[in-house]
View 1 (tube, rainbow, N blue to C red):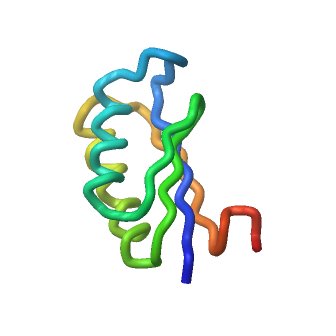
View 2 (view 1 turned 90 degrees about the vertical axis):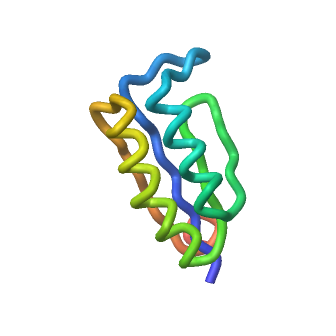
Length: 82
């Protein structure tokens, strides 16, 4: 099953991601799956195991590096319900 995780880490400063954002992105890459960094958030696409691993890793890494909020959404398929 293909699964997609989309997350945003705060505080958020467009164009200048802080260490908490970079730590979350690195954790997402380490968990496996395909990672796409956008201007307002990051998307991880992969199998259920990779994305499930990414959820915990992203939250732990972001908070440890100073995040005050991690907002995430997990969707089956391509993220549009399909």
